[in-house]
Image (cartoon, rainbow, N blue to C red; front, side):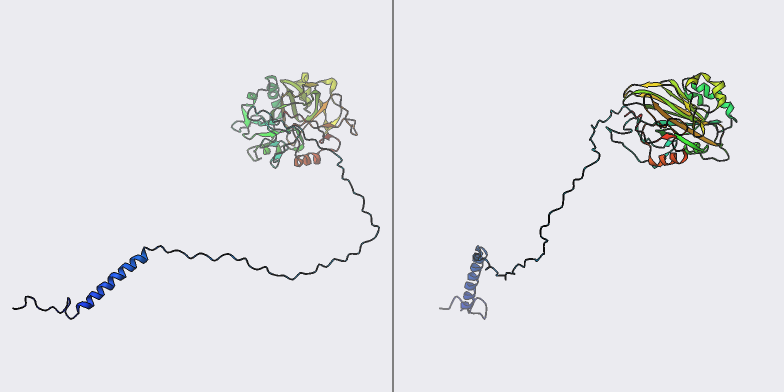
Length: 372
């Protein structure tokens, strides 16, 4: 009988079946072993126990005692006590109520003087308010020129009726409306301008002298408020080319040195019985009427000052309190305090002292009329 199948020599020709079977078995074993290794959880070996480092032995250095020779029987010196000559008390801090623009902290708050930057301060005032609520806002007018800067008045005699009309009409600034007005305002806390050239006034209000502007026949109208902490009875002393002061609508001082105005235009404004007989800045000093100030009550105050001749301008305003003793100068005139509503900056004080005759004005007095 013939064989149905031929004898097979292997699965792959030339390779015995036993070899293939052995390779297959080894492949399966390797696959199983690899799976066991991949899926086995490898645990880290535990750390060895901590063993502290043995202490390091350092050689000890023997201490050497310093040899200091001390004097025998030496007694300590007496202890000095530093005693203050003056004890400064801390005043109560009272902030003022702010009522509106132009009011606020002035000469001080509860005794502390607040002195802003005074670099822009001049004898006519500063471009910024130095003591808000305690300064006077000044408006400059040139009565020589119209609003279009056309010449309308050539001499000082022509301005007397204008000033008289301004005073009679309750110090109404509309009287000056037809005349040239500077847009710059200055804020003053005192009125002490001893003998400066007339061009200095317009210059401080931003008007430089040129061919189109002659710095004569000009005025400054200041408006503000004053108050006296203790109250009392006062009167003004002073002088000026033109100088008028009124309180609460009443004219209390005329300090003009113009005889035409004294004798002709408004003699009723002068108190002849209390007319001063002393010189102030080489001019006759004038004295005003007595007026009363209630303690701490603000009072409206206005000042009109100016010049008409050209050359030099002067404005000095002092204050006297009834019942106070004042040292007298060589001429017998009392050395009165400068009227002020705030501390005078040192730079301005130096300019004033340089031009004044010693013994004419007291610039160190504590008398001050600040509202706050």
